[in-house]
Length: 329
Image 1: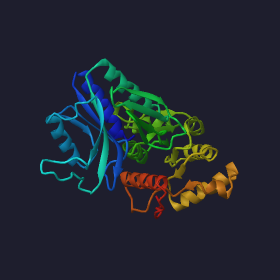
Image 2: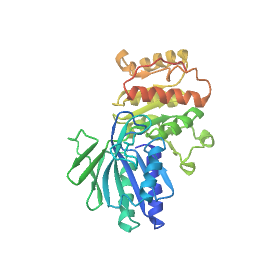
Image 3: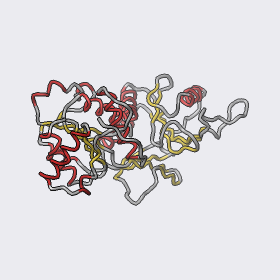
Image 4: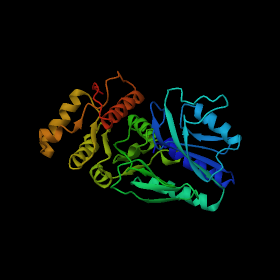
């Protein structure tokens, strides 16, 4: 789930607390081109809105239908592209695709508030889970993920099961401006983010704290940090430009099943780092081959934010199985 969708859960909880009725839409399937992925969220109280399920056209049409008295059931499935307007023509997204939505009408009750709270906590846990919605009653429940299921959404009679896989995480080694921008981009892209450093004298340089909507620094040894947080869905990024931070964290990452391991630096810095890791850690060429360095795609990046964009672009490309040109940042 992306950061923008998580914010929808927070907004919906706030509206329910304010005694507002809420319509919550979840994308459950798409056909053809569609601007938002399965699981994307949109919510409205009939006037205000949060999140997105299209480029804007569908949200407007949905609000119009609500104001016309539609979607009164506790929950339903709605195929946008198979219903008709007053002239009898089929609605389609501008990109030519169609989309299926799970629409839940949430009453401003304590039960609805509790259900949203449980969902939010499940998402914050970063673990796999399943959300099941009863179309007749509108009630939902959160359950541990059924690892035997390979479908993101399953509809069985009046029960809709939405499967949310373990969250992808970005583990940052070292405070820097690049780290700050990477953290912001990664969270917007749906990754959970954690950062560590041992250089407490740099604490004042980290502005993207939890107080400003970001993440707080874990002041601990990088190897312990990686060991405690890494899994097969983890991205480990060494961005300190300091061997005391980068090398320890990278060595711990090599011992793990991390999905992606990357380090920032020039080609010369990278060569020196690799020589050092081989000598100190006694790593083989196969071990070293897991290291993406110099990190980032070749987009001519110079500034910290441009470097961060190139880094996250490479991470996303790797996750999507796409091979692109390398950079030398």
